Image (cartoon, rainbow, N blue to C red; front, side, top):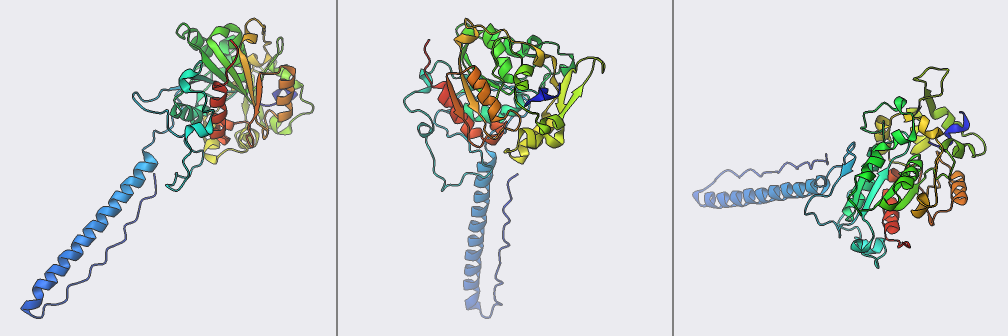
Amino acid sequence: MGNLCACLAPKSMKKKPTKRLHNPPPTTNSTKRWTRVRSSRKEKSDAVLTQEQVLAAAILFQQQNGRDPFDRTTSVRYPKSGSKNSNTLPRSSSSRARALTDPLLQPHQLVSENVKLEDIETNHFVLVHGGGFGAWCWYKTIALLEEGGYKATAIDLAGSGVHSFDPNRITSLLQYVHPLTDFLQMLPEGEKVILVGHDFGGACIAYAMELFPFRISKAIFIAAAMLSNGQNTLDMFSQQAGADDLMRQAQTFSYANGNDRPPTSINFEKSLLRDLFFNQCPAKDVALASVSMRPMPFAPILEKLCLTDLNYGLVKRFYIETPEDNAIPITLQDSMINKSPPQQVFRLKGADHSPFFSKPQALNKLLVEISKIKTPS
């Protein structure tokens, strides 16, 4: 979202044709028997070779296609009942299939081995997308968390993802975050979650922290707007010195209420999405975003937050910096952190504005590490 307010099937195995040797013409009765024996042995050898090739192809197909496909638009994914995920290694972010010679790391080599999953306060992550994004952007994060035994819920905010509401008709932050606050309100008594906010989703989880502090164990801001009391997202981005030409070029405004009224939504030029949000991301994820992103409602950006120490201040905050970010530059991230210091800051080396695409495994590792940090009650 950046300083938007500077301007108001696997490869099939080809089976090699089997060369069959023609039986030599019979000469005498004594050679016919041996000819039939040699021919029979050759045919059996061919049959065995064919069976081995078919078996090898089946194994390869199962390795590459036996995994569950990622959901593109669903907001919630739950582990299969009866599945044993606690010892499963998180899937590699590489598109290359894992080879048998690759080293296999155990989960305790990736995260703190002194803290068990059942000993943490909650294993439930609630993922909140940024402006223009949707629950679809968390598909890798959901899969990796669930493989590690966690529960992950991705929320589509109003007018985002598969939520059918028109973004141009959203007039308040309360209306925009209603799917999130409704979800938190419906949690069973005594259950807590870890809120994760990306981009403008940081302002959204801050709003929820003020309303439901006792239902939130921790709050994690990923390249996100982390505001102070009385501040709105417009003010925060206006603090950045100078104007980002790329961001200004990418922004397009909609005026559903007339050109003489404030904008109702912001969209981004598809041709500039890669450079702005996904400069370190795989091409397939950029393609997914280009067909999935929707306009971002403008009114919530103007709304000032009321954050108190008695509510918002009760929830321990963590920030994950993205140094290769072209949308919310690292200098702006540092400025927010210095103004309202969280409990701990992590820097995701090599990550752009969308680390759930560019650095999924590294991001997953940090999320798991943060979940295991003990905080004073």
